[in-house]
Amino acid sequence: MFNDAKHALDASAQRYEVFKLEPHHWVPNNRKLPVVIYRHALRPDSGDLASAFEILFERSDWPAQWRDSIFDYHHFHATAHEVLGVVSGSAEVIVGGPGGRVVKIAAGDALLLPAGTGHCLQSFERHFQVVAGYPAGQQWDIRREALRPDELAAMEALPFPPRDPIDGEQGPVVEHWLHAA
Image (cartoon, rainbow, N blue to C red; front, top):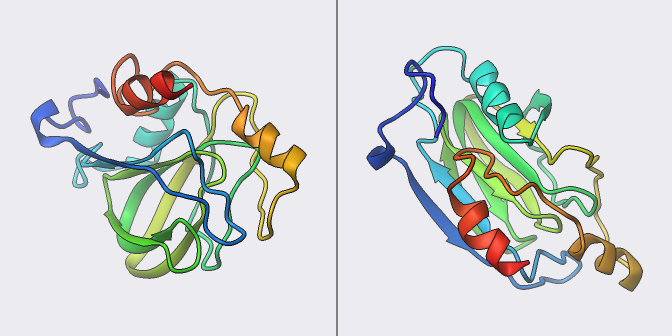
């Protein structure tokens, strides 16, 4: 867990939601790797969450690449896994493609999406903003159509760091992703 006492929560305050998604229409989702929602990854009232998430992601080999919101149309990334740290506001995000699961995330939470996972901003409150990180060496794309078989195979073969973007040597990537690979 993040060691900066200003931003970190007691480990007992943090919890994870882990779930897998089946392919849905043109959205492949990821058959091997689960989605993870980190509740209270950082204290929402601790100041500059954007910088704190960027430092945390960098330490775990998931360097941040941008700050913004989430697109309000269904899409997925076939060339990179993605972690989104919520730095302000709250939102409902559809995960899994059209008709998928609606999840609510708020400042201090993080959302880990394995490559292929559909996502779309459904609604938001206040100034909703996230920081996005990706495994070192991976560049995200935006896909809104079904993948060809060779693209699907390349997506499913994407490597990921052996460190969890939030908890480093521990956490859901170590527990759930490394065992699925």
